[in-house]
Image (cartoon, rainbow, N blue to C red; front, side, top):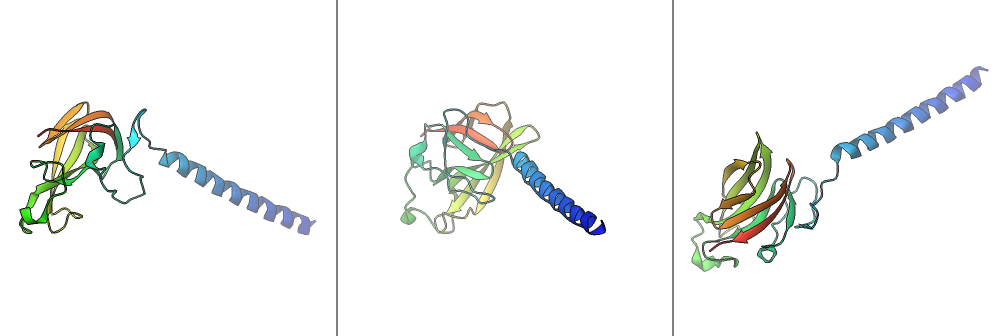
Length: 167
């Protein structure tokens, strides 16, 4: 009788453990959610966890894009000159800020946050400077320097948008 109770106890513990593990996976899946683009938007880039993604190319300007917070929405360029990759002979390696990108940071205190990040021609992969700009959460058009961002949908963690370049 004691042996049978011990086997039942072991079986019950195994079932409880398996159920707990399944519940944890189910809850974590629900908590993570599934961020995705708004209807009709293209994913600007494949998203990976906790890693900044490269900005979509300038050839995507004018098309609906989707990005998660913390990622750039335009690539580093000297937009005052055009959309081309900057020529190293045109810039001093000590200069930063003329070449810039814009990153979507998310929403904080009811405001959309973008960061204008300045680059040196010596390193177009790592920003040398940054300045955060804040806009009302319900604002649908944001102008930053030579870039116009048409906001289709914004959440705390994602942005669906279209870029227009004005020269």
